[in-house]
Length: 435
Image 1 (tube, rainbow, N blue to C red):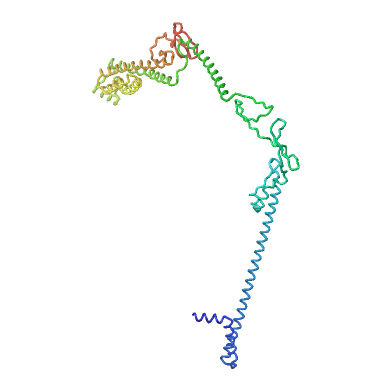
Image 2: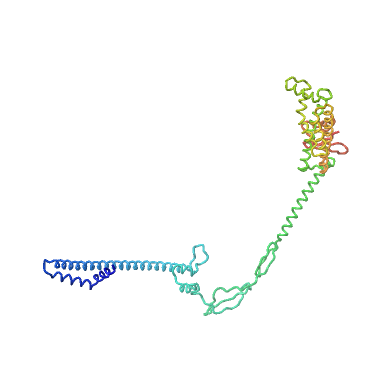
């Protein structure tokens, strides 16, 4: 394969093409009509055709190279055109930017536009031009050649400036005068000493606050004095007791105790009815009689004693709860618990049940007295008048009490003494002697 490749490369060269042409020509000169004559003619024609094909291929490659060169030149011209346009646009931007230096941004602006080197280079300007143009604000400015220290009309120090021609530059530069710290009471300011300056001194924040506190304390004292005087007058009218309402906590404690006392009247009446039934024989207890009473009620053949027994059993739990509520929080709490437990455990003996009911009533009465003592202590702690228990239901108060003699539509708020006589104050604010 290597030899064939080498031979083909040789035949493709000018020397190989010449050799083939000579061989073909020789064979073509042989006897006309012979075999070698025909081979020579064909070989010579093939060499000519191959040469023409190579020539055409070279022409095509030359045309392709010329086209690429033309496209490259056209692209370079387009790039140069775009670069020139970009450079022209940047130059126009730089010219526009330079024309805006020293101008005001708008009619409301008070500052002129200043040259910005970074903005200049962003628009395509060189750093050398930026360095030169940074000092353009000083172009045409007068050069100060000498200065003279002087004073203005107010006596302040001023520095006068002159150029090389002796002309004054500007109106003079005010000299520095150190400001002085001035305490104006309400504020502290630093003021330059000047003739004709008048400063007003005011109160300090501490003085203003002190005055406000003093005025507030005076108003509170006057209001307290007036309130104390009214309370003293009302206390004198109520027999020396305080007229202030009880605090919320004390009022709740009193109301809770009053609710329990009021409920104790109902439970005591119920316990008394049960005792009377036992004493009259209308209610009795025993293992056998209890079963008989339950059987009668279940069979629909009840009698007075069985009905009383059913009522006693149904009322027993309610009486126990009300009694324990009455004794809760006082010294009789444990006694009431024990008495009721013994009653529930020994409901089969009539005498024992009667005895326990009598003990429970006695314990409840002591609890009522303790609840009243609690109320009296609370009211005494706040100098309030003693509470009138005759207003409570079931108190057993006689008809001569203040509650029984109170006007219709009014309720007693508090009672007291005045000039040795009992005084009652009603809900409408009126007072009257109760005796």
